[in-house]
Length: 384
Image (cartoon, rainbow, N blue to C red; front, top):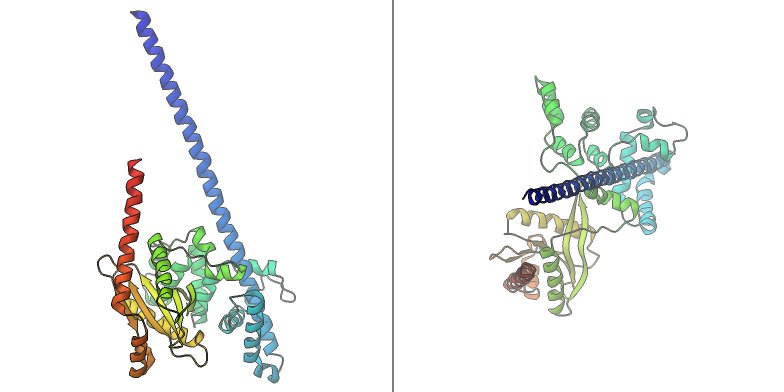
């Protein structure tokens, strides 16, 4: 009897030791894994900071060279705008996106807003090099772009100082500028409390290393492709819609998807862009996984204004927009024709373009098929 009890006790003790050893190994692994994750995230942040610093330094130097060329006499000053245009064409041909006339003008303004006298503590005024210049610009380039929109020099310096002191992300900086924090704090009787409150981040302010790396400015500077991830449902809908539009006839020519554009200091992406050969116009398609809202119409209006100004070629008609809302049970399709300026042209567009009801039915049918397929995959996984 005692031998049985002793054997049972020994067995229990051994099992306990094995379990404890397993827990200990798992704990050690979690420590190693957590440490490596932290290391890689910090390494990515450091890489993005380094790229942003060199990018800001490069753009400041480009701005300096443009300004100094303009200051070379009246004749050169008059040639300034032509210089930006020619530089834009040649640099875009050599390096790709990021060197529009507007961007080059922004680099010029960047140098004027941060003159050598202001950053001379860290930079040699005679022969600044990129390495020393990079130390003078600790904020991301996106932050400097946002700061350039602040007209008051005192306000601009204030926001720059607070962004550095509080470690604001670009989103926080944008919110503070948009809420006129500088003006509000100037009128406040308790400035210390407001400054302390400004240090706290709000939900959505944080930017992950992955998001920072995918900053359109960073991608342009490095000459990398802009791969934007949408949900599986949106991707499938866009792909199916592309095929469907092309199957409607040879009038539709595919131009691109996820076409990026910049309005003021914000980036947007157009889901699909087609060209209608008979109407001789661009068709801008925006897909929304949800119900239609008037904000969608306002956004499309912005897209069409941009497309008319930057993408429409001589001899083409004004672009038309198509908003597709794939809300469950409430699919809609709406053409945006307000900017055409002619009822006759609008009527011709509606005659040639696919019927809104047909498009809405196609989107709704596709959504149901995709969701049924996804549900089926989930059921198979559960059965296993």
